[in-house]
Length: 224
Ligand SMILES: C[S@@+](CC[C@H](N)C(=O)[O-])C[C@H]1O[C@@H](n2cnc3c(N)ncnc32)[C@H](O)[C@@H]1O
Image (cartoon, rainbow, N blue to C red; front, side, top):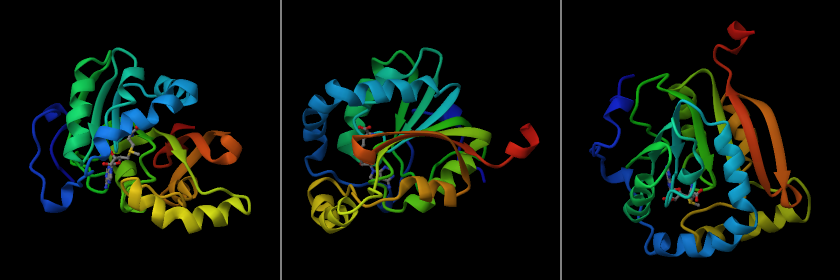
């Protein structure tokens, strides 16, 4: 499947009508709302995630680019984001990052790059929001090299009651005010179902936040 090359990163991509979402002001608020959490803990989680992101990295649902500052120099990051407001902020952040970051418009369900283009894929609070996480995860497998890393920092559906039920009940209202973000996604299970193998997992806030390293199972046996 040839959908362009990572070398063409940064050039504007032609997207169809389904390819963009509108944040309706969400972009302007996002960084301000996240700021206290970034200072308290999220920044440290992001930094740890970025340590494992080496070589050619695809970040999906990049938002305002809050993850960019943590990538190491020498890393080549392609960041996909469909929302024009978020993307504008992400592009400004990309310009100041230590790594080479190209922010391009696109949805995680239709990654516009050929098979095996990336060494690692990153989603930081992204798979909670993409419309079809199963399709997005299959796309990430497709564009990752064999054994490539999937690095996740996500809030997930709690495993314990009554937390799980409360999240399920609150999910529609929360999604309506939080740009489509779902509280009730079993993201690690979805990643395993898509064919990723869990290598490392760390949880925070009673299991609500998960940091995880997974590998693209394709080719793993051959590498052992
Ligand atoms: C909660 S924000 C996360 C932003 C950023 N990753 C961070 O760590 O702060 C979720 C982002 O997912 C984007 N998004 C929504 N639907 C998407 C899709 N189908 N594919 C990729 N990104 C999507 C939204 O526009 C939004 O910027």
